Amino acid sequence: MSELYLQRTVGGLRPCDDAGIDALRKIKVGEVVQCEITRPRNLAHHRKFWALLNVFWQATGDWSSTYGVLIELKVRLGHVQEVLLRDTGELVRVPKSISFAQMDQGEFDVFYEKCIAELCKMGGGIEQDALRQEVLNELARA
Image 1 (cartoon, helix red, strand yellow):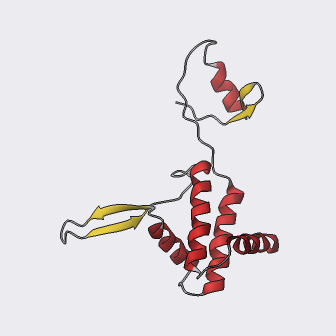
Image 2 (tube, rainbow, N blue to C red; image 1 turned 180 degrees about the vertical axis):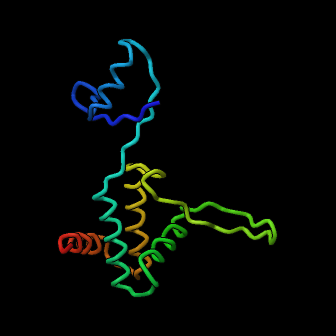
């Protein structure tokens, strides 16, 4: 099975690189293939997310690190897996990964927007527009 990167054009999908061109040449005209469409994660958006966490953490100082903010966010947003500890019977909520392999860009977009809303609540009523602007300012300084 091949992983292809395709670009949407007016005429349909076209390969983005030589590997994609070669893979599509192997498919006969008229042949039906099954595809799963995902949008690869945008690295710039990933950096923007960490800038968001950093801006919030620096402004509040209530967590030990940006990673601590991330863990609490995941739990608050329900981005967790419940695990039953066999020896105690305790149900533990373990934060799920937001890695590039676990979450495509569409899923990350939704997660990011939920994070903004939740951080504003966690920060005692921070305005979303103000937080968004400060993240852009942080990125511009970097």
